[in-house]
Amino acid sequence: MDNRPIGIFDSGLGGLTVVKECMDILPGENITYFGDVARIPYGTRSEETVRRYSLQCTRFLLSKGIKMLIIGCNTASARSLEIIRNTVDIPVIGVIRPGARAAVRATKNSKIGVIGTISTISSGAYEKEIKNISPEADVASAACSLFVPIVEEGWSDTEVARAAADKYLSPVKAHGVDTLILGCTHYPLLKKTVTGYMGEGVTLINPAYETVLEAKSLLGKSGMLAEGNGNPHYEYYTSDFSPKFVQICSEFLHSDIQFCEKVDIEKY
Ligand code: DGL
Image 1 (cartoon, rainbow, N blue to C red):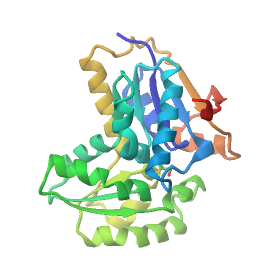
Image 2 (image 1 turned 45 degrees about the vertical axis):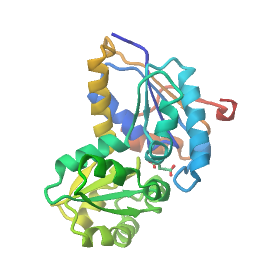
Image 3 (image 1 turned 90 degrees about the horizontal axis):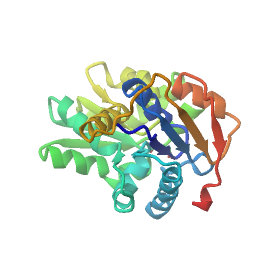
């Protein structure tokens, strides 16, 4: 039994998709979240910068006494999972491996699509994990840079989103994939639009969900699940408050944030 919080960080508020899954799958767990709103996006930055930022987020969450770290951000997971694992002595889970594993389980024709930020796609992290598990898998990837701002604008189910999906997803669709990894925190909010373009026959994988299942299994195996007194404590920290903060939070979380504090992340 371990009642310390699970720490989750993301480049912004998109990682709240992971928090939401945690609330549903691990309702007894306390959660401490950090969103690096001041420095989003990570997806267009260099590997070096993403690593530096990710280590700062990690140090901040460690200062809050977390028992496990979930890197909610796909870009940060792709670029800095190993370096973080080598730095800390608590379990660290990124979203890439759980997402890749679920896709390999789901595919019937071994053709898997991956969509994400430019950084995630150019890192090849999903493709590497997929091939590690299933060397014969045929992977088609696409960077969908406009998807993040479209979601943040609240335009997930609009003509703009559909036009972008058309443009970005056509090579992946032409490849004949039957499974598509939504390899970015924001993309689960575009499920309807993506399915509308790819067709109902294509299975969409949400790495956030898969990651929380992995966290649950790991906590269970190591006797680290929380007692769960029916009143979990959620704390949110952010490096900035954008004007659309409250709106974006409630879109991702389907509920309002009770406690949120601003942090000077450069100090960590
Ligand atoms: N959270 C990022 C990801 O999952 C998307 C936003 C960004 O580019 O920072 O890759």
